[in-house]
Length: 392
Ligand code: DP6
Image 1: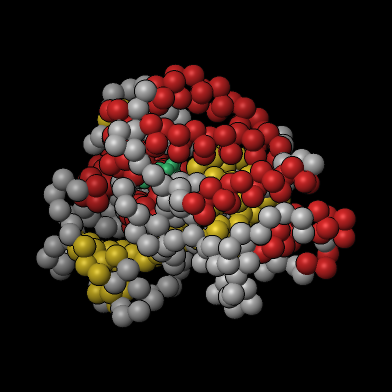
Image 2 (image 1 turned 90 degrees about the vertical axis):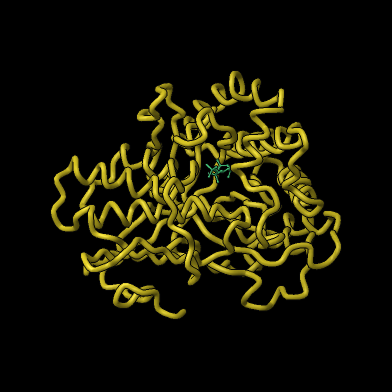
C-alpha cells in the first residue's frame, strides 16, 4: 500500500471565469485571473492510497462515499493522470492498481467559497505525487477537467488561466503571474453571509449564460481582453488602487451577466449588495480605494485589503454590520487582527458617520491572506488508515 497526503488552496477570481466553449474538456470563453489564499485558513486535504489488492476505485468526500463513475469528472482526471504517468514511465505505483481517496474541506462545501477548485486541485496534485508526475502546465489541464477554476489552485500567488485557442485544450493552461511573496501584505476578509449549498451551481449557471445572455459576448470580445493586461500590470506594480477598481468592476459585470441570463441567476442577496455599497462608502470617506470586493456564485463577500488597513476596515465592518456574536471566537476566524486602538481618531470619526445596517447581517468573518500552492504533507495519516477513511 502506498499513500500520499496533500493540501491545496482555495483561489478567488479577480477576473471571473464564466462560460465554456467546450463542456467536457472545460474550455473557457475567456481568460481569468485569481489570487490563491493561504492554506492555513482554508484548504482541501486529500489522502490517496493505492494498492494492488484494492478491488475498485473508491472516494469519500467529507466522510461520505461518493460515486466513482465512468464518464465523471473524477474519472476523467484519473485517466488523464494515468496517461501522464505512462508517458513519464513512473514505476512506483502502476496505473492498473486501484485507489482509495479520502478528501475533506475545512470550510463549507459549495457555498460559493471555491470548494471545487481546492478539491480538484488537491486530487490532481495528490495523484501527481503518487505517480511521480511533476507540477507543470500540462498538469493544470488535468485539474481544469475536474473543475475549471481548479487549474488556478495549482499555483500560489496570482495566477492567470489562459483560455487557449486549440480544440483539444492543450493550451488552456494556468500560469503564475507572481508568487505569494511578491505582495505578501495582500489580505482578505471573507464575510460569510450564508454557508449553505448554493441554488444554481456554477456549471449550470454559466451554460445558461452562454446560451441566453447578450452581454456575455461583449464581455468576452471586448472587456476581458482589455482588463487582463491591466490587472497583470497592477499586480506586478503592487498598485492596490488599480487592482481594486478592476476587481470590483469585474465582479459587478459577472453578476450583471448572471442577471442578463434567462431565466436570471441571482447569486448576490440584499446583504451582499449592502456590503458592496458599504465598501464604496468606506473608500469614499478614506479618500482612496482601501478595500475591494468580489462575489462568486453565492452571496458571500470577499474583501481584499492591505494588511496595514485590516484593523480599520474591520472596525468599519463591525460598526456598519453590528453582530451579537462579535466577541465569540467563531465570529472572527483565521488570522488575528491588531486592536482597534491603532486606528487614527480622525479616521474613526469618519467611519462612525457611516449608516448602520440591521444586526447580524452575516454569520462570521474569515481573515486570511495570499498564499502558496498545494503541498505534500509527509507522515499525515489522519484521513485514512489501511486504505479506509478514519472517523473524523
Ligand atoms: C464564479 O470552476 O466551479 O467562481 O468549471 O463548471 O466546475 P466548473 O465551474 P467552476 O466555476 C467558477 C466560477 C466562479 C468564477 C471563477 O472562479 O473564475
